[in-house]
Structure formats: structure tokens, C-alpha cells
Amino acid sequence: MKKILSVLLLLALVMSMFAGCAAKVEAPVEEDVVIEEPAAETLVVGVSLPTQREERWVRDKVAMEAYAAEMGIELKVQVADADQAQQAQQVENLLTQGIDVLILAPHDASASAELIKKANAEGVKVISYDRLVTGTHLLDYYLSFDNEKVGALQGNYFVENAQPGNIMLFAGAPTDNNASLFFAGAMSVIQPKIDDGTYTVLGGSDFTQVATDNWVPANAQNRASNILTANPDATISGVLAPNDGTAGGIIEAFKAAKVVLPVITGQDSEIAAIKRIKGGDQSMTIFKDTRELAKAAIDMAISIYAGETVATNGLVDNGVFEVPSVLLEPKVVTQGNFQEMLINSGYIQESDLN
Ligand code: GAL
Image 1: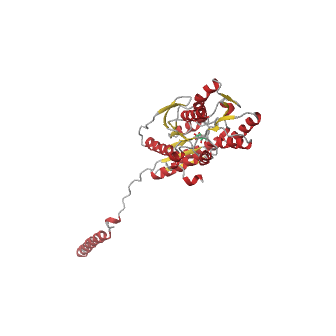
Image 2 (image 1 turned 30 degrees about the vertical axis):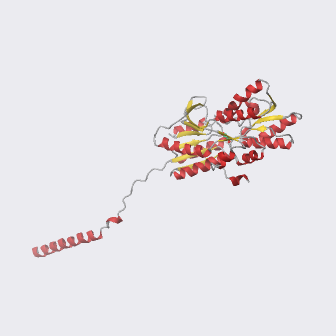
Image 3 (image 1 turned 60 degrees about the vertical axis):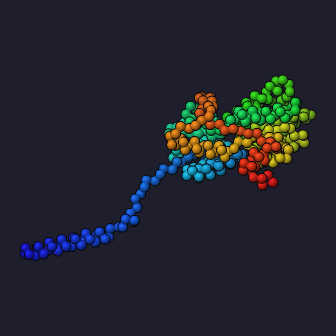
């Protein structure tokens, strides 16, 4: 029995040795072993734009998407059709989906304070993009152009080029904080010329009288038609139009009334406006390089996410506090410099103007 047992033991020992060998041979070779690295977290940026009706907002979107892709950032873009309820819904969706930073160009400046509150409750920092959100101390940053300067540049062009006489004034949407900044900037130059009798305003000069609901060109066109109809014998020497869209509508009204086109301002350097400038129908526009603004917004989101201090160059009052701001420079575009300013810089193509 003892003998049998010891033979069995030896057998087991030998087998286990072989088993050990076999195990060693069968062990996966080293290159088959994949050691999982924890995935680097991708920054997710939510973008809420108010509209795509004006060409400039299409450009902002395209530029943001291109630069975010280049930087390896996930961008979730939502566009509201100039509708506050829709924008509110979209921002809530973005917050639910989980974003790290929100870039918000508000349709309605004051109603959007509520959206900042919601983002803040989720710990999401907000960059107010191009248009300022007013009435909240929870806003983190404002990134735009110097909008009073936009108006002052329009105003300077106006007083330097419009002959003494009758003028018309237009402003943008009352819900857009930019509209009052543009108007204030322009009137800082034009009002003294009204006060000294150089210009006579037809159709009113208070912001509320001259504002254009939702920036809709047809609204400006209708108001211009009405003023022309009410003043059939008046020659108009200048029209302050806040942007290219409204300028286009006003020019249509003048053409329909078959009266001589006045000096007329604009803003945004839209292709249609550059065609009008080239052809002499519109006098000037403003160039705000949306490629730069879009890039600055993404760079700002990256800095915020990294916990870095964001470099700012100004403070803008939103009615509650001075918001740390980055303001880019607007430039005047005329028949004399659109080639250099817009075509040579690649903002628009020569072929776009055919
Ligand atoms: C403003 C913007 C302008 C113009 C306008 C209409 O807020 O600064 O560039 O596009 O809205 O959308």
C-alpha cells in the first residue's frame, strides 16, 4: 500500500511539473498583453447661437466648428431661430447632455439671465458671445467686439459723408444689448450735428422709435417706406442703418420709391453688402472678423477648463456688474479698401462678388 501511495505521489509530482511547464508555454506572450491607459478627457463645449439668418452667424458657426476640430474639442452646437423659448430649451438640453463650458450668444439679453443661472447651478462657466447677457452677476466672461466703437465708426463715416439736410435713423433689435451700444456709439457723433441744426431727423430719433424688431430687414424696409411716403418732397442725405441686413431693406425702400439713394451705413461685411458697396448702393460696412471671435471663444473655453486665468482687456457693465471682457477691434470697410480688408484676408472670395 505504502509503495502504491509513493508511486502515485511521484506521479502526481511529475504531472504537476509538466502542468507547470505547459502553463508556462501557454502563457500569453508579452506583446499580446494590452495595458489600458485611462482615456484623456475631451473638453465638451456647448454653443448656443441665436440665429443663422444673418450671414455673420453662419460664419461664426463654421469657424468655431473648424477650430474646435483642430483643437480636438467636442463641440455641441445649437441654433435658435431668433426665439428665446427655443434657445432656453436648447441650453437646457446642452446642460443635460453634460458640457464643460457654455458659449452663449443670447437672443434676448435680459431673459437669458435665467439661462446663466441654470448653467451656474450645474457648475458650467459661461462666455457671453458677441451679445452681452444683462442683469446677472453670475456671468463669467464677455467676448465681443468693441460695440460702442462699431457705432462710433458708423457715426463718424455718416457725419463726414452725409450732406447737411434730412436724415433717417435706424437701430437694431431692442432685445439685443448690442443694438443700444451701436446706437449710443453712433449718436455720440451724430447727435451734436442734430443739435446744431446740420441734420433734421425724419421719423424720430429715440431708440424705441427707431429700433428694428428681431433685426428683420423687412421691418426696416417698411419703416423707411412709411417715412418716405410721409415726406414725399424731402431729399434724404443720410441713413444710419445698424447692420447690412437692415441696410439692404432700407435701400429696397428707396429704390421702390424711386428716390436718390442717400449715404447709408451698415455692419457685418456680408457678401450682399460688399456687392452693394462695389456698385455704389451702400456706402460702408463694418468688418468684425468672426474667424477671430470664434477662435478666441474656443481658446477661452480651453483656458477656463484648464483652470487658467483668462486674459481680458476690458470690463463691460451688464446692469449688475462689470463683466470681465475681451473686446476685439471693428474696422471700417468702404469701396476703397474692401479688396485689401476682405478679399486679401480671405474672409470672402473674389468669386463671391460675381
Ligand atoms: C448683433 C451682431 C451683429 C448683427 C446683428 C443681427 O448682435 O453683433 O453683427 O449680426 O446682431 O444678427
